Image 1: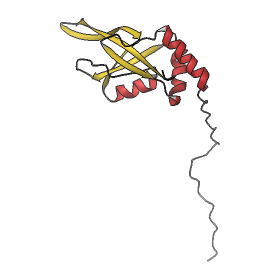
Image 2: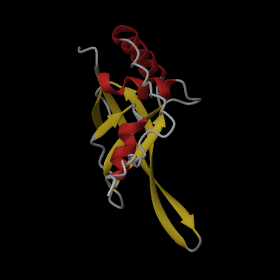
Image 3: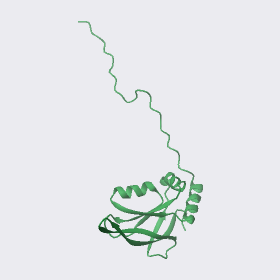
Image 4: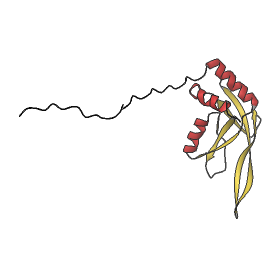
Length: 146
């Protein structure tokens, strides 16, 4: 098995929510488990470019996994999973519905191991701007005698 790929089984359930006088169906993840035994099996693939996002997620109070489940307003059909909040935010910008659930401890350990093998993402260092940098200045003009 690849060191950056794991099958995850996802189980969803619909719940009826009352909002004022309207009833709305809201979907949520009831189970995330390792392996290929659930109704929807997705491949969680880790990427070297997302290492900083994985670390951010792992250091949060409750690490989460994010499941892309089709377009907003439609019955969800899980088709992708990620541990990166940045990737999930991109999906939401594309009007995809994203469901989230607590990350199983086995996945947390696997991601920690991945980061240990491949190293932490390099910290982005921003250069300090010089005072006045980026502003146009008038060049001194030489007065020509007439």
